[in-house]
Amino acid sequence: MIIYNVTVKVENEIHDAWLQWMRSIHIPEVMATGCFEKNELAKVLVDDTDGQTYSIQYRCRERSLLEQYFEMHAPKLQEEHLTRYKDKFVAFRTLLELID
Image 1 (tube, rainbow, N blue to C red):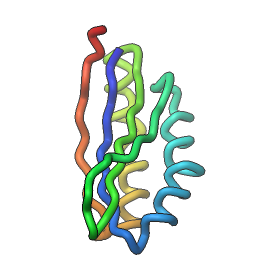
Image 2: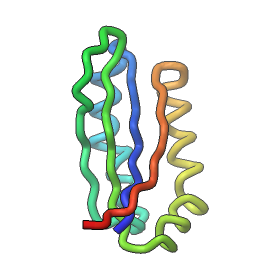
Image 3: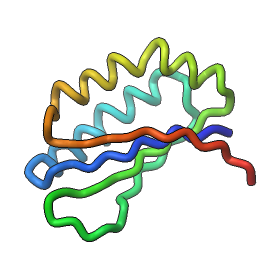
């Protein structure tokens, strides 16, 4: 199992709208690609006055499905996120292999 983890820190001024958009539009669109079996949204527990941080984890059974996502879907979905919330967030992505 491979976990595609996206960590996003959003500024407080857009937090509520961003979280609603992630839950109702973005995460469902990622899941609709058929590349992932499960997702989880978690708040990172850190004290930070200028924003809030989240981890979105998508679980994928095969590396080939993840590559398909990166090639066919990720550019469009990431561009939508960037266009909507430009300069109001920072994000980084991590791949993890679940071993136990």
